[in-house]
Length: 137
Image 1 (cartoon, rainbow, N blue to C red):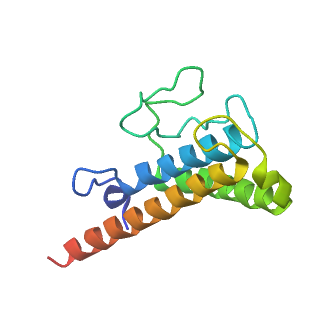
Image 2: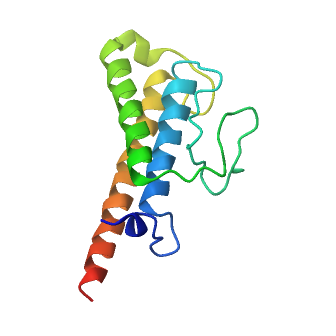
């Protein structure tokens, strides 16, 4: 896919790069902040959902960030490595540990995290299929 295609919006939704940026935010929010307790775990390219302000107060998010696909992918790869390392260290007791917010426990936060990652993976693949299909039209 070309850089232009990876920045193309499909059905008035996020482009592929913005979807990757949002997955970075999901990991930063649900793992690094909720589970690991980091104060400001947000990478500058993280993209909040449209119902939230583009710059979350007290965070390092840069609402004007315009990363390339390769840059967003690199950040996401690093975040996924953190997910793997963190999950590998968890014990059954850790999953029951209480945390703030509506997830209530580490296990609850991880359910949200993996549910969101699964949904956005579907969206990204759906959009790339549409873009690829439009090439032959």
